Length: 213
Image (cartoon, rainbow, N blue to C red; front, side, top):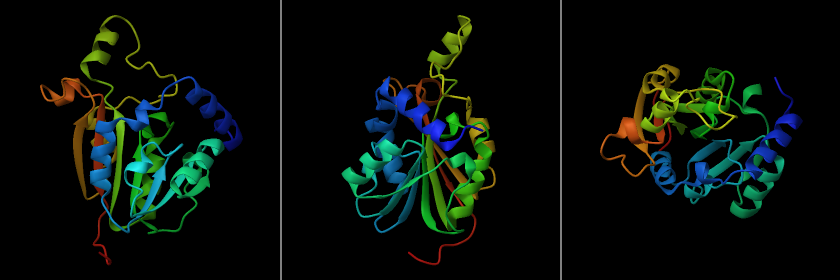
C-alpha cells in the first residue's frame, strides 16, 4: 500500500490537473448537507481536501477533516476553521470508537483498493444511531454504458479503482441498519435517475439508538 507521503504527492498533482467540480457540485453538495444535518453535530469528513464539500455542512457543526493532501488540508483549516488530520483512510481512522455523529465520504470510496475496510472504520467511529453519508459515481449511467459499448473503459478518471452499481453500493453498506439512496447531478436526472444521474448519494444509519439529541 502506498505510503502517506507518496499519496500526498500523487493526489496533489492529480488535483492540479482537474477542476474540483466533483467535490463542489451544487446538486450533490446540497443533498449531502441535508443528509448530514445539524446543528452541533460531531462530523468527520473523509477525503475533505480543501473543503469544497465540507463548507456546505460545516456551519454550526463541529467538523474534523481528514485527507492525504497536506496542503489541501491547510487550506480547508484556514478557510473554514475546522480541525484537520493528515492521514490515509486505508490505514485506519485515528479516532476512538463512537466519536462522531456523522461520517462523510464524498466521492471517496471509488478511489480505494478495499473500500469495505473504510466503511467498517466509519461504522466503528460512529455513535449508535449515527449516519454514514456520502456519494460515489454512478458508473453504470447511460454515458458510461455508451463508452463501454464503444470499447472504452466506462470511467475516465485513472484514480477510480471501483465501479459501483446500486446493488454493489447497498452490499457495501449492508452492515448498517438502514440505507437511503438518492440520485443527483445531470441534466436529465428527473427523466430516469438511475440511468442519467452522475452520482449516487447514500445515507446509512448505524444500529443502536443515540443517547444525545
